[in-house]
Length: 593
View 1 (spheres, helix red, strand yellow):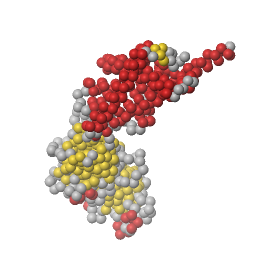
View 2 (cartoon, helix red, strand yellow):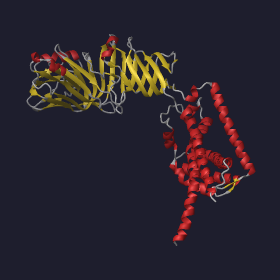
View 3 (tube, rainbow, N blue to C red):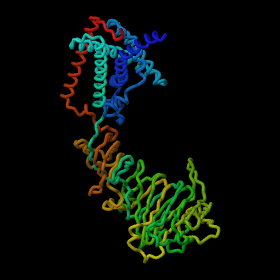
């Protein structure tokens, strides 16, 4: 019994060693066959003018790997290994070339079609028909390649006068693997040179007005360079700075600097009525007595319920401070002429995840939050709502209820007045405009020292969806609001002052261009003329929807393209004639004895 099992297992193992190199060779070719199928299918059916655009429908794909091993890992399909073993074991047991060609063609066609079906069960009927036609042609081509590899192994053995049967099988296996690898490498060269775009060098200067978005996220890299951004560097010129929108889970968090142990702060709260979005009137209210005072605080958190909200950082003669918003994901912005024609309006869209940091020192900070007590639904129908403000310090908690006047038609005044203290903290308003001013005030301004200036208090503001804006900004002041630095994505509409891509000057005749760059390493900076300039590299550049990146094949001169095409055609012709000769002589081959 033991001997009979041994007599069965050993030949099976030996035959498996014989057929595995051919099965591996066959699976490699079938795995990359879809690339050739895609090329010919798209060339004959696409209306695009170039090969790359035909394959990718005029779009840029960034999924190509330039590394051969990574490319193989991406394209190699393990599903083909087992059926390839079966195909080789049935087709290469011995026989003449024509018979082997027929058997291989039928088995390879069946394998490709079954795999296509199970990989794409929801494939459309016309697409599946295209796969069947491609598989029918491809199976014959692959079968011919297998026969050529068998013949090449025989030629090598004859050349070295190798008469050892075992060594002959070993050489045949090595030749099959090398032959298959060479074909896969050839497909790889075609793929990365024709269908993989090269990184382009860019130098683009844009004039005003400008609108669009950028990304400057480099969280996956260790770097010390600052990022490009609007309002993303600490700005001290914030006299006319404000942000508006919809507060959702809004929070204003302040904490006294741990290095200022001797400093003492009070929180002053002024409750507002008939007051909305008027910086000058808000500043005037600071001369009124506070509605509430919370003394000797070390930290504070102000939160509100969801609703339409505007935020102002007020200024007085002792005020010193800076503000900055972080860059997270795509940041939308625009720069255009101010409505008052006194300069430019700089606006940046903010998201709920945007973190706005305000640093202040000397006598503290002044924050004004104004609300419209209205709620608008999806049908643009508005209803009057009440608002609630909660202030939590390390000393006490204060809940303020703002009850709007329901007479919407007669109570639209904006006189901006401070309301006196209410024992129950409930305020019945005379309008639908309300708000609070929070003042974080240092006790003794005379006690300011260098420690105070070097260690400012910081306030974190989150939970606002809307926009930040600075108005009446001159070009000379742009550097106070726009930071030079790195970015990795850009999508802008603006007039083009100059555009150089891969050292080629692209003259622009349109008033406004739509420029898109992704997978980029760019530096954004302000020019002396107040324009925005972007330099660096990008793997995907669109100019008004037109692809600007080129493949290696597209960069070649025509004479080199003709030379490469002639050489490849010559090699294919030689191999095809050799295959015809093998079939005509109907030579006999055998992998499994």
